[in-house]
Length: 253
Ligand SMILES: Cc1ncc(C[n+]2csc(CCOP(=O)(O)OP(=O)(O)O)c2C)c(N)n1
Ligand code: SF4
Ligand SMILES: [Mg+2]
Image 1 (spheres, rainbow, N blue to C red):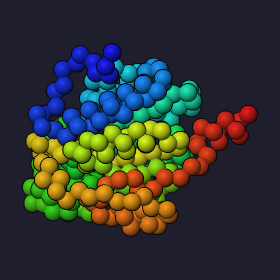
Image 2: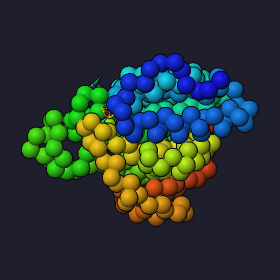
Image 3: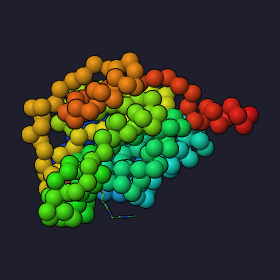
């Protein structure tokens, strides 16, 4: 049986979310082929167009309140350490409504994986700027241009202590599958920023030509330098460290 439910996909034709769904099906399918029961792969998604992904996956899935995917998965993982906990968050969901939760999950090294669908826009609410929208961007909430500076999600996660940080492009299928698979396999907090064009409110498919690969850095300092280039894709940094769940169970033994 495939990993898709019968629920009709309601994203706009051409949306970058299709590439993310397809790549995740492949990455998770690989885990199932390795003998991991699909009941052990739990997914949660936030509020926004990206959030619909949990309706499309035949896995234990949860559609949680805005910005709360990281604490939800933290609880799930603490209660049942055998689960593989995967979260899908939006740039608005993860970096506006829920930015504090993402930072705390990263600094704790909670053993969860977060995929950030970064379309630089609040898509579901039809095109307002988010914390990743470029300065000057015009949208529903900023008809004269965005006065704010954007966050760099990979930079934020690296300085917060994430032990796996990567960036990928929704239209570069094989690399996205490999990065998703590696992120899920990593023990500790994994974060992948996925550049995801929104054809209706922020169509940036043309950056495909500028996307280029980087080599993994050996220090956070070098990874920070690499991720400053917003079209650089690949795994910036990874490191094995004690996870939050292991520390909690060790201390409370
Ligand atoms: C607490 C709260 N604030 C605001 C909203 C309205 N809201 C629903 S979806 C959404 C946009 C989500 O944007 P993003 O996370 O970037 O997801 P996308 O739709 O782009 O995938 C907003 C602001 C809400 N539902 N709850
Ligand atoms: S509004 Fe944008 S993000 Fe939402 S489904 Fe349509 S193209 Fe995708
Ligand atoms: Mg968005």
